[in-house]
Image (cartoon, rainbow, N blue to C red; front, side, top):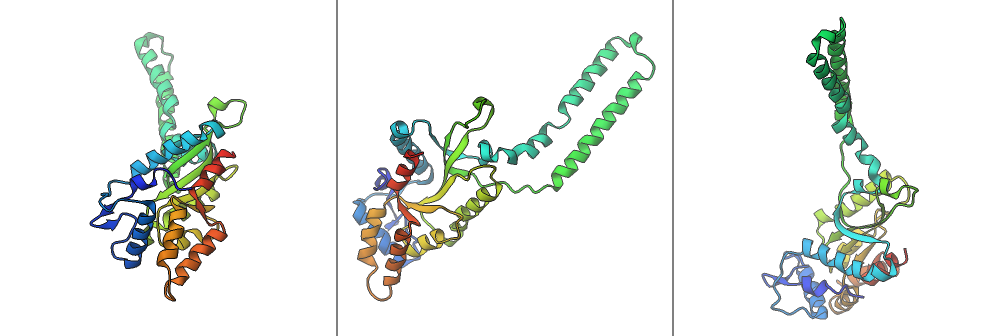
Length: 289
């Protein structure tokens, strides 16, 4: 099934489909064929895509899951650290932010009490308090040095996240469980291909517990680029296309002749191997959780 919001995000920029690379004639041709199958008016102007797409997808999935899987929540722009499987990644940073604060506050309160009634101060107490403050400052400095030496690579944020309440005796005290995460790439370029795969590898390596379903979602029309993204080594579970039925027709119309048949073969192989999937399968998968 085609995502119901797809055609509304499609448009032309300088006469070219907003899914296409203006420097690639094949990209333009197959993009135009895809827009024809989608019924995009030639006069439709392309607007911003990223935020409207994320908002439309959140609304669509929320509506479709409201009956089939009401326990799931869909949201955009989420940090991995906000979820149960990855909450440990923020512990070091939080420790650095909070380290010594409570002790320093307690020392300040003690000093204030002693200064308020100096006649009751036993000998050597102020000296001991000064020594305690110096010891806390030294420990804080050593902690900061250790934190500075730690790796500070942060996991990439999720364009779209699907979560549920974590199963535990105290659900309010535990972050939500990440069921699925998605990287949204309207179109693909060489410099955009690596991000989803890097993120998938990070998520697999850094998780504690079950690996969430992780996939890319795209409107890219070129089978070659879809293959470069989807025919990896398991960093992505799969690639979902917003308009796979229409792309199938566009590929059949454009990828003819000895020079282009390889693109059609790549497309067929990806679909047959379930590396490239329909948007309806995304909805069905989430509905089954």
